[in-house]
Image (tube, rainbow, N blue to C red; front, side, top):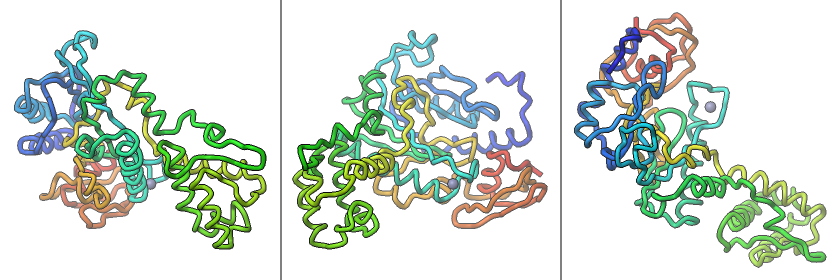
Length: 372
Ligand SMILES: [Zn+2]
């Protein structure tokens, strides 16, 4: 590896040594490594070298141990010649379908807080349970989820049914999930005094909206924001029965279109999550390799089963280094954070601390501290 122009800092060398050691014995489990393009990153850039090909898992491991990249990406695509360039010479054979979900922009910034991580986890579960399984018919065994190592989750669909999809088809799938171009007027229509709309039993977005609307109807303030008369349980029951038949206004609601449109807009936003459509549409995307370390956090881009996702907490379950300590000096104020249930901080800039290795690595990777 050519590092001639780059003078590695003490911190970078320390982390690369640790990462190299980690890769000597970690589980890899990358499917078809010989058909994927790999990208390695360092202290300055998440992808410094790409067009890397390997003959199989043993060679991949040997490269990870010797090059000790701080970031490892692999192509969602399979190629006949993954190391060839330009791209067209790789001979694209197919690609997994991937979804990239990121935590919301929030004041926690680079020290992503627990609430942000919990929210993006909820949205990941929703993507799988509300869309990929019921609407697209993928089985749980075709879907694999991993923590991104930083602020979100990646969902990989590995299936013959998606492998050959081109950019446009992938974009359509992403647009469907994000509700892009979805219009209230296409799902609701008036006939005289009546307002018709989707039934909860129907597929697609209409059914999702109707089901989530009915689920919220028992919430008092939600019901009252539609009509005062919904205070009466008998009227709510009448409303519920009618919507089950696709009749959305059996009680004469004032300003009904405007009210339903508002509910529709706000619910769609939360149903559609926060997926990055450009990632899904990119058939030659390099994405964090599941099972690799993330150089911006030192956390593991750990695979998580759907059954285990609810209880998965990155700062407990994606910790790669479980023994040892390191002494670090804060380069900036560090908010309170926890590693494996142990709380650290807040620290002031200039403070020096001996910390468990995982906590020290976290701060070094965030470039919030230096070795002391
Ligand atoms: Zn936050």
